[in-house]
Image 1: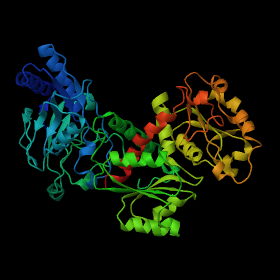
Image 2 (image 1 turned 180 degrees about the horizontal axis):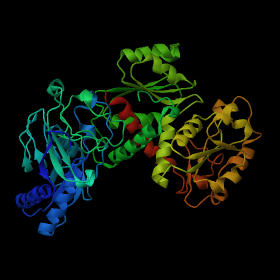
Image 3 (image 1 turned 30 degrees about the horizontal axis):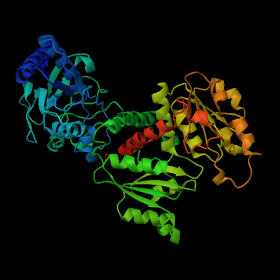
Image 4 (image 1 turned 120 degrees about the vertical axis):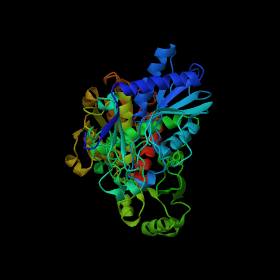
Length: 226
Length: 302
């Protein structure tokens, strides 16, 4: 872990937050009827699967879980090198008249969620769309809020928030990192709450200008969430 | 990657990225809204100096599914028939702000020349007898989705290799991706330089078939032939045509491919063309997804 980075959530704390969200989803949707969970790659996908398992454990009801890649709907495609696509897997039965709960790791500018809403519109017509995030770090750029939040984490724009999950990184943690050395690069806002899975677990992801996006020539790079 | 001129320019990783992207984009064809907003506001020009239905329609559909504006430009009925050169046509398109130019031309190297004249991306959709990269990529994509792998696959390419841009593009691409290619043709239909290609060469179809996972039949391109290359079509068909009897001697899960258009009774019998092991229509469907992937990778991003 780089100097100055501290864990905000560690180990089982993530699952405790998810268990609470699972209960809240059941409460708000009157027992989870018609709920479909859609994770946003990359780390929203394992989170959606965990939520589905937890809901199953609590209510003994299977909830379909899938993934929704939003790369083709991003508003910053032109300002960054080309990105490799993530997986989109819509559960059988489709999305029409379902209550779709979007699941992502970090809610930041809200631009990923906007893209996800656009993508949903092309895939079907859900009865309602809700949003569940593990961490809400603030600094919204669009009128978007989460329905279920694992942890509200007030941050400065210059700090970095990194989510690590057992499925993708071998351990569970939410890390809050220090400001990047050059403040000038942080002024140019480009939300990115995750880094390519290929990088070492110890590097943290900062808000960085588009020009500093990781090169996406590698197929594993799916771009940042926000 | 800025242009797609030759499959020889693609590294293993780049080619795999294109195939993986195509696999994701294939889902779009099954959705209710078969469109993505990704290339909104970008212009793709289809510049076709040679007749083509499949490739032009496929590129057009691919660009439209990505929301690009498409301009079709064929040599017939344009200022080319009044004597305008390729360069002047290219500069005209440039002035109109084309972000991508898809070019098919009867002269080998035309796409390469064009890439030096325009700012946008150039996609080679077939230049003379040289290359046809997107065809090779969609062939590789079809093999991978049917057989699950490309590494170690044994592919026989049979027929008019001399006039085929598909053969060259496939040899280069499949070799990069780890498959082994054997070209099968009468000596008169092989290019002089074939010994420099990274593949094997055989004159005997019956010897190659039993040890091939994929057989790709090529059309005899009579329109490019100005002398006789074999005694009679009947003899050619006997020696190098694929019929049911020959197919039965191939491994059980082997597939038959053809870039189209097929000449039934010549290089492929109707029985084989209609068999479930023949992937011709699959190749066409995959062509749209593959070309979407290429357009996305070349035209989005900065």
